[in-house]
Length: 598
Image 1 (cartoon, rainbow, N blue to C red):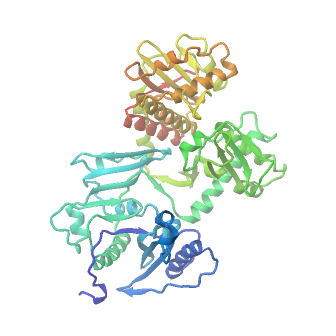
Image 2 (image 1 turned 45 degrees about the horizontal axis):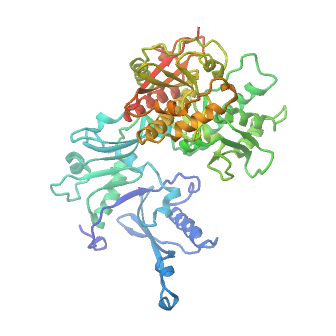
Image 3 (image 1 turned 45 degrees about the vertical axis):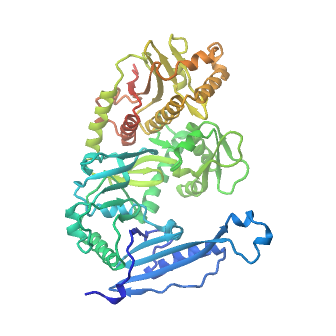
């Protein structure tokens, strides 16, 4: 039966967002308090006052509590205010006003939102950024026709892929377990329309669905249909089972992520610190399998050439690091030096909570990237005998068949892309990466570019050239979290080089050569004819191949290839998988070499 309160003339395409009621600032609040907390947060920031006494009250329709918030913010002066002479401005107001609108809909324990204008700023800090994708998991059969898909790799935010598909391709054909979808556009099939959205008249046309942080049916609906949609979404999320779109699932239970998991991580960091610096450590102490990279600004992090490790608010006596690979160790040493011999886990935590890492480029005093030290940490931990992952300062779990699937796929990729040439013919028996690279300094066709940077990016560790091909080789020891760093280096270097090469811009390689020639350890090995060297990379010349090279550093598994099931580092495995996939997406040739260790 139609309710007069639902009648309205307009029909619009609506994007539905959800408020994350588990946000630490909202826990324990009622729906009414949450809505007014968001409104007060927005007004306080705009009006720059701590006292905001206005309170929204709900209108209740069929059990749905609606709150309507509208705010007109004076944003700036129109450019005509500066263009016209004062004589023509008298009595005129050129102030541009921006509308901020949010319709909150509280249905049982859920709060949904529709926004307009600057309304995104009202909910931005408190929204569930995966709502659309999470809700669609209740609907999908995985047989929907897909239009486009954006994913990010679990091995880093750099590894984002945007793909558009030909007609007829299905969602099940394009999903893979090592990626997390961030946006999907697809055709809403008849089964879903007739089962879940039967109250909307779609006519005979194909209707597209956009699912990302919001849920968006690309079809104009009335307020009455929107009202029914809120009720139906709540019903579906309450009664239906989810079908996961990825093997990774972000863990959002605050009691776990903010308490239990962080405690486990802090214990791991403290143990690693003691194993590195304590006088009581054993002869062969265990080192944690940890990668250290910025949680959101990966590319910018790799471009920094100076880092400051400091406690929050500290302005002097901080630690400066010029090599990103040494930040983690330097940070642990910084903490260790501030603790006495009888320091407890709690003493460690107090310092670690406040520890920050700021990154800088060149001589600039302005921070380029920054975050808490422990937010940079990527690692795999155990909780109740199951793996959990701290990646990009978020926590993830995986499905039960994840390990078998990943071992199989990673093994396939290593074998498929394994180099047929014995390029790195020296065995690596002990010693540092630098000492291994230097073995090739006197070999014909080899150049050791280790630590030679162009625009703060390393072209490669070793370059090898034969009659047909130039190989850019990146090297790491160990098959653990450092493979994530190796994968990132390969992709970032390949992108920077290929974009420069295809545009005819030699500045990147030119800077690498200058850096190489200026290093003291390259005395006698300088590139004297820079122009001839740069000409090697001209389009239409030799093929360019990028190489990921590593070796096993454990006696238990001396050979990595075909023994992936015996290795524990899941981060290393899906980092390798993601690197190969991303390189293939860009059509960059990639080869893999396992260096002999005996």
